[in-house]
Image 1 (cartoon, rainbow, N blue to C red):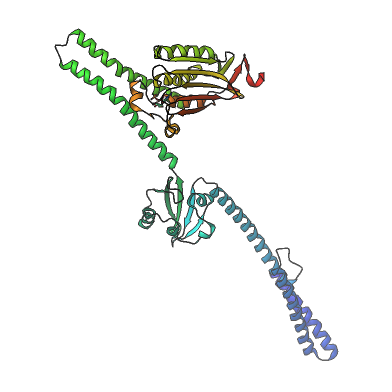
Image 2 (image 1 turned 30 degrees about the vertical axis):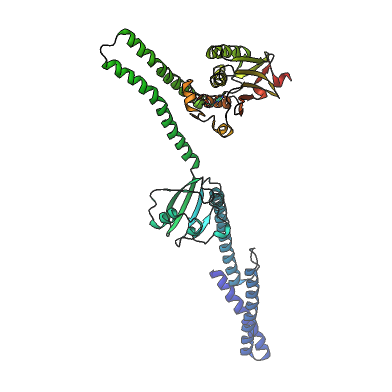
Length: 438
Ligand code: ADP
């Protein structure tokens, strides 16, 4: 800086000295000094005008202004360069933060100390219906739920609040608020509909299992009490009581077996095509028919239509469980004299296993819920025929694990058809996969 000052002083001295010398020659040395100084001021003004012009331009290296002006220009240039870098860093940081906040699966809303919306992310738009024009508007004008307004006013944010979504009342939102900075609030909103549904399902499942076990258990306990109290019981009566205990005990056993199978299917490793073995479906169906005939006791006509060369890649035990469930259901629900048709045939690029009966049929309103655990159309009929209400849930899980789909076609009074559709990749034809053979 001192160098630029001395250079500036030197300019003043030179201009004044030139004026003085010219003044001496003309015989007016004092006027020469004044004119010399005025020339210096004029030239300084010109340099300052150039400097001002440079200042107003976009950032580039300063021109040669000379003296103190040049020094000032360089200092300003360096400060502007530093602040530009800092601004760039901040902009980049802000952009990254907004990108990451935007990618959050949760809605994030910043509420200022007046309760107005200061900022919100993309998820908040879709989850809460906030629009860009809602910025700076009071949050309570947009989320009008009385419980939310009370929660915000009370200011106790140690717990979260669950409310129905303002856009869809079937959805449940969990709201957490964290105060920060100078009275600002960060509001995070999560869609917990799925978790709530799972919790309800778990509660219902436990209630259903308990209910299903309680009935046979009460019967068994009743007979045990009677046996304990009646000391004069002869062996024949005891045998009779034990015979009556057998059915509920068997019922409990079937239920526990079905529950264990479902749990294994839920948690088991996926049945990848590469790791699956080839199932001889026609042999498996023969076993099913024997089982079905035993269950039917000659009361039904069982017809089989099977493509002998069509085989399936999968887990035999699981496929058997799924198919036999459909076959026994058809026998159990079809009255005496009815017909059950079992088919295993090529269908499109894949194959289908179908069981059709001419039983009572199922009305359309029950169809979407049939594969739910413990869902029954006729509870009494299901229980009396030994059903656990888990059969079709097992079928659904097995098919899911084999990339297959279940279709139900039923008409009241006419009968029902359950079909399992297997994709091409699961099907083997004459010892060759259909995809490679065809
Ligand atoms: P369940 O052990 O009660 O048979 P499922 O899950 O196998 O349980 O079947 C669910 C319900 O679907 C049954 O309770 C029954 O009401 C109905 N259902 C299943 N298969 C048939 C069928 N072939 N004909 C009529 N109703 C059926």
